[in-house]
Length: 393
Image 1 (cartoon, helix red, strand yellow):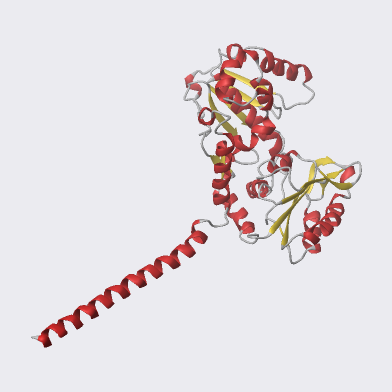
Image 2 (cartoon, helix red, strand yellow):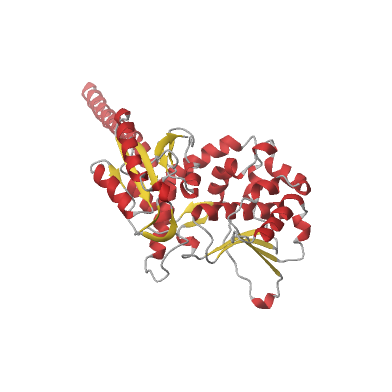
């Protein structure tokens, strides 16, 4: 009897040891997975960065603005359309026009859409995020009434003043009520005056919530509105990620060198005061990075020579997004690389929002890009054309 008892105890002990070993092994595997999982769950990608950016923006504005009201795209049968078919300015100009048309649509309870196919379809570079602005073309058989507003031409001073006055001080919702579709081509800021229009008081307060009207400008609201409207296309994300993968835990110094007319960009305006901009940025960066740990320089420019100069000066610590350099409003229409150039330009724009330090030329493109940075005024420098040197902003 005792022999059977001891045998049973030995078998039970062996089984218990076996079960414990399985539990310990499983626990160890889970511990290892938990240690590795943050790296997998939070990759250094544009998508993860943008998600984190939106979280910060929602926390920043949730007690100030009625964010849900900004997310609404009215399903009204009437529309306001930002239109860009040709000569709409660069990306900075277009963003002013897009933001203006978007807020006008919100105030007028109209559906907002973007119709841009210059230099190629906008969906190739950005796509709708919270607001579905996808363009829907109505057939002529619908017999819809249309109003076309185009204030791009600077010489149309009287017409531009007339439109500005309507948006600033008239009941533009009523003035335009007879039209089904309002198409707007502009690089002007109509958003700021529209929010201050006395006829729009009730609608404006519904949008702004607790934000003082004096703070409600395109400049202050751009970071939120851009993210609500847009998310980068896959080709743009892939190009940005190729840079971000190499700058994790490094200090990213970004140079945007806008020189104007040059062999790479022959159809642009000439900016004679910027002939020394590239060398001035290199000289400044040489001294600046002495006190930075693991600096890496990202450079983008409208000049292939400027990019080459920076890459050669920092052969082991500089990068650029590869692709054709394109001014998206002034280009050779016969070029087979227009869409590729547009993709590169918008990838550059997104990357300029990820910098720890920004050294910029005077440009709407990089000015708006800089506003996407977590701290847009921290470590911000620009090329002063009068002094021909870099100065802190």
